[in-house]
Each structure stands twice: as structure tokens, then as C-alpha cells.
Length: 445
Ligand code: GLN
Image (tube, rainbow, N blue to C red; front, side, top):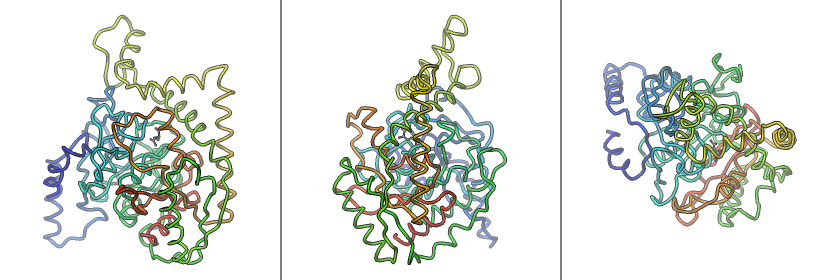
């Protein structure tokens, strides 16, 4: 069974924070019996799925890879978990991630570093690194990640798999531990566009438990994958072919554009002039929201509490000093700073205005094209021992962040290899038009 494969690979990959072998095998047995009886199966019945450890699942440790939640057990199911169960999927594991989804490597996890299945010295990316390594390493068929600034798409690109960040408001965030609430979205990861679309069908759609969830029709995203993209207009934004882009990745992207042309798509050069401001904007807004969201980890409500302290003030300080890792503290400090009186107008308010300009760029572009094609990442996966500064890491999110700031969907699919490492391309779509990017991605595969 699948656990043989996991046993052989997990000590190398470190994808999981929790393995649910016993319950998974029990559920699998029930599915076998159902098959033996010739009963009809639910859409994902018996399919092994792993979910990122920032999604609450009842009775399971749900840690967000943080010391502050190291012993926290979910007391309810996130909406996506509930829907997975209703569709018959078997949740076999929780996956490793950067602490509270802050990072691009899994190195900020309190638990472990995950490894890239293509090269065990390299990062699978992050923050949904374990979700990507488990699918790329054939430990599970499907996984769920979350994407605030690229955390589904960058690890998908690094591990040679498919990852979708849906439109903001498409998938319920109820039960997702909040990082930056105006940017966070849960999304599916898999080894083909069809698999990803099938998982998306199950998790997406309106949920009354999330006030930002949209009451819109969910089309059948697998039914639409007919391979016909003749006449589809694909925009190529010149601002994504920057100096920092690895020339070999540029070449893979250009080859992909040629292939789309051969499939009958019309290629249209476009401009998204405010792209260069995306990382700076994101690294103000995301920490601002994070500093507020993470205020709840105070040693009182749940999770870790410092062992000894003098009074409540000291308890808060010690609990948070001991419970959060360095990257989370950095974000809380940046966020508190940009929200503080005196700096709010200069940083946070400015960032909100630039966010609007970035969104306007896309709205204008989508008047002319159906899909926008870009590289997914400026480089391929790097060594876990590489010493990159926080700012160097932040700047590498430049191609994924604009979709979060604008709320639009983004799909990453494998497009080739550079130096034996996978390279992804990104297809961006109009808000709530995941169908078109999935169709384009599937046609390309
Ligand atoms: N790398 C980005 C960050 O560190 C994205 C994280 C995410 O999407 N969760 O914030």
C-alpha cells in the first residue's frame, strides 16, 4: 500500500508533520468493501490526500509548524476538510510548512526541513513545501496548500507539479489559520491539471462560515478540459522578463509560449507597469495583517504558555518570545511598525493605494486577453544550505505576489527542466475564471 512508499521516502523527504496511518487504512478498507459490493463511489472516494498543517482537522494536531501550537489539536473540521471527507477522500497526513506560512523554503518550520524530491539537498519551496514534496515524491496523489504570496505556486514550480491558487473568495478560509486574511487562499496541488481540477471541484464554492466567500456557481472544472484553446488570447507581460530572471528559465518560458502558439492560441504582448512594486507592497500588507492575526497567540486561549513568569504582562512576553520563531517575529515587528500611528500613512496606506494600481493593471490587461502567461519563479530550487537574506527571499516572490494582491487566480504547471530541476510557468486568469486557465494548462500538458 501507499504507506510502504511513504516509509521508504519519508525519512528523506520530511513532507509530513503527522501521519494518520491507522485511520487511513481503516477508511481504505471500507472503500475496498464498497467496491467489492459494486457500489458507486463518491468523487474522491479512497483517494489519499495530504493537507497543509495550517488547516484545522478535528482530533488531529494542527500546528502551523510553530512551537506555539506544537500541542494544539483541532476541535472542528475546516470547511475544506469537511468537504474532502464528504467527497470520500482519505486524509492521510498533515504536511510540513514554514511557520505560519511565512517563508519560501520550509526552513522556518519548527518541526523539520522538507526536501525536494528532485534533489534532496534542495528546498521543495514554501511555504506549502511538504504539500509539494509529498505529491512530487509520489507519497500522496493530491494535497492542499495555502497561498498568500505564492506558497502553492512556488513549491509546485520547484517540485515539478501542478498548483492552483484560486480566486480570493472561491474557497472557504474557515478553519485556515490566518496569515494575511485579505490574501490567503487554499488551493489544490497534484501531478496533473485534471487531478487539480477534480480536487478544486470538491473544495470550492460558497460557504456561509466565511464572510468573504462568494456565492457563485462552481462549474465542473474537469468537464471543461477539452484541449481546445484555438483563438484563446494569451498575454505576455514584458515586466516579467526582468534582469533577475534566470536566462534558462526565460528560454523555457519562451518555448512554452511557442507551444501555446502551435496549439492555436493568439499571443499578445501586454504591459503590467506596476509589477516591480508588488514585493514591497506585499511585504507591508502581509506583515500588517499577520501582526494583527497572530495577536491571538497569547498563552491564554490556546497553545504554548511559558513555564515561569511574573504576572500576565510577563507571561505574554515570555510565551510569545519563546513560542514564535525568528521569521514570525520579524513579520510581527514589521507589521506593528507599519500600522503604528505616525507610520500608518507613509507605509500601510501607501501600500493599499499601490495594491489598487496593481489590480488596475490586471483589469486593463484582461480587457484584451483571456489569460496571462508568465514565468512562475525567477530561479529554480536552491540548496537548503544557501544563505539568503530575508530580503533576497522576499524579492523572489515577485511573479506570484501580484495575483494575491489582485485576488485573481493563478495556475502553475511544469514546463521543462533546467540543470535537471523542474521549471514551472504561471497562467493568470480573470477573477472567478479558473476554468480558462485550467483549460489552457490542460491543453499544454
Ligand atoms: N513567500 C511568501 C512569504 O514568505 C509567501 C508565503 C505564502 O504564500 N504563504 O510571505
